[in-house]
Length: 424
Image (cartoon, rainbow, N blue to C red):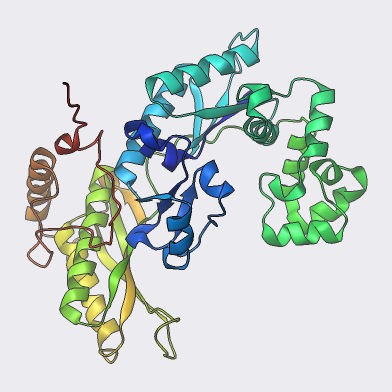
C-alpha cells in the first residue's frame, strides 16, 4: 500500500503557524523580488487571485479583498518541510520526498489494520507537532495514491482529509471522477491530445482501445501510468540521492543592471554559493556555466540570452577557483554588450564527482592551500552565521540583493527572529 501526503497550501500554512490571525483569511506568497504570485490560500483563490499573476497587475484586487501578501521565506519553508518529513518517517521507514510539500510512503512489510485510522493519526500528529495541515491518499499504487489524495483534499468534510482506495469499486469511481488533466504526469500538450481522442477522464485513459495510441504517444512512461491506474504497481519509491547532478544559483535583479562591476559582484556571489553547496555534499565540479538574461519585454535587442561554459583542467570546489573562472567568462560575455541592461544572472556547476574520487593531475593542479582555506572559511561562517567571510569581490553586507518588502521573520532558523510573546 502507498500513501501520498500533501501539505495544504504549504507556503501560506507556514506563514500562518506563527501568525494565526491570518487563518481563514486570503493569503498570497510572492516569488523572488516580489514578482508574481506563486502560492495562494484557498481564501485567496476564492476572491479571484490568479496563480502566476504579477503583483503590480493585481494591486487593486489585493487591496479591495484585503489579501495578505508575503515575500518568499524559503529558509522557513524548508525547515517546516524537514520537520513534516521527519514526522512522516516515524510511521514508515519507506519514504520518498517528492517535493518540498509532498511525500510518498510505502507500507510493505508493516501491519496496518485500518489505513483510514492510520492516516488520521499521521494527519493529527503533523498538525499538532508542526501546525501544518495535510491531506493523505492511500492506494495500491503511487499514481492511484495521487488520485486518492485529490479526493481527500476536495472533500475534506466527508473524508477528514484522508481517503483510502482499497476496493475495485472505489478505484473505478475515483478514476471516473478524475479529469484527465488532473492525472499525474499528464501535461498541457498531452492533455490537448487526450481531449482530441475523447479521453476526458482517468477511466477513459485506461480503456483497452487506447493502449496502442498511448504506447505510440507516451511510450513506456504512458504504459506505466496506465498500469498504475489499473492497480498494478510498477513504480517504486525513488531512492534518496545524497548528491545533486548539477547545482545552479540564479536570481533576478531588483533593477536591471548594465554596469560591469555590479554584474561581477552578483556573479561572484552566485559562484561562491555554488562552491559552498559543492563542499556541503563533498563534491567537486568540472564544468562551470555563466548566464545573463535580458528582459525582452523592456529591452529591444537581437539577443536575450547570453551564456558561456568552461571546463576546468581539474575538478574543484574552491570558491576562489570557481569565482575566478565565472568572472573571466563574465568579462567575455559583457565585452561588446556594455550598454545592454540585464535582468538576471546565474552560475551553474555541473559534471560533478565525489571529492574523494577526484583525479589528480600531473602538471596542472589546484593550489593545495585552497582546501585548507575553504575549511577555515566554512568553519567561520558556520560559527558566525550570515556568511560573514566572503571574497573581496562580493558585497560584504548582503548575499541576496532582492526586493522582499513583505518578508516574515525566520522564526525557526534565525535566533534573532525567535518569536516574542508579551505577557501581561
